[in-house]
Amino acid sequence: QVQVVESGGGLVQAGGSLRLSCAASGIIFSICVMGWYRQAPGKQRELVASITPDGSTNYADSEKGRFTISRDNAKNTVYLQMNSLKLEDTAVYYCNARYDYMTTGLGYWGQGTQVTVSS
Image (cartoon, rainbow, N blue to C red; front, side, top):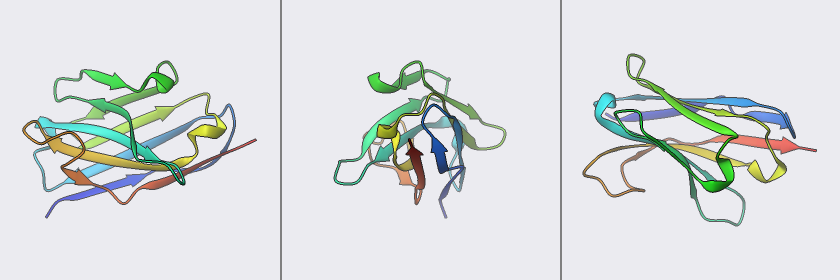
């Protein structure tokens, strides 16, 4: 049974930092593309960052330079370090795991973790 579990969300002031974690089980983590997505109220879910099995990363333009995605294959965990947080970063953040043959946006999803940035 596949499980994808996010943690680390919370309330933070603008300009602050948070580190999200996502632990996955029931998959061959080391060969999965891992991604962080977010969905703000009234908006569509969007890709924040992704990391391939070999460590190549991809970021949405608005997150470049502020967010860092990383993975620890020994712990089956992917992280999202978020710095210089803005009000518009407020959203539910979801972790996604997919094998390379799966279409982007499919695969296995966690339940999400709320990130709220206050002024």
